Length: 80
Image 1 (tube, rainbow, N blue to C red):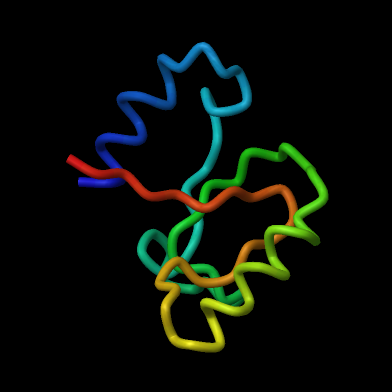
Image 2: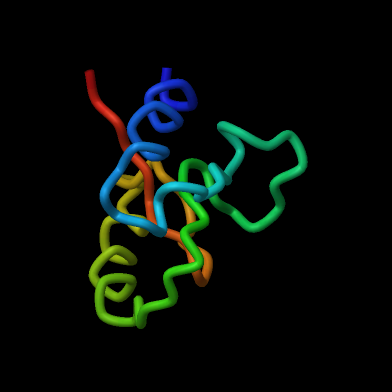
């Protein structure tokens, strides 16, 4: 569902860096080793320091399911 929906919406998105973005993480790649579960490689590099500090509190409590966030990636969650 996520793969199909992202392809349909990402390729037609007015946000240009989503048009050819790649899905990454263990949901989409058998050989993923960076701790990501569901993310998209947008090649849009931003400073994640502050949000990752906040996120670490949820991770430490076991309340986060999307895995790690690599540079140039954004978390991906799609809901019906």
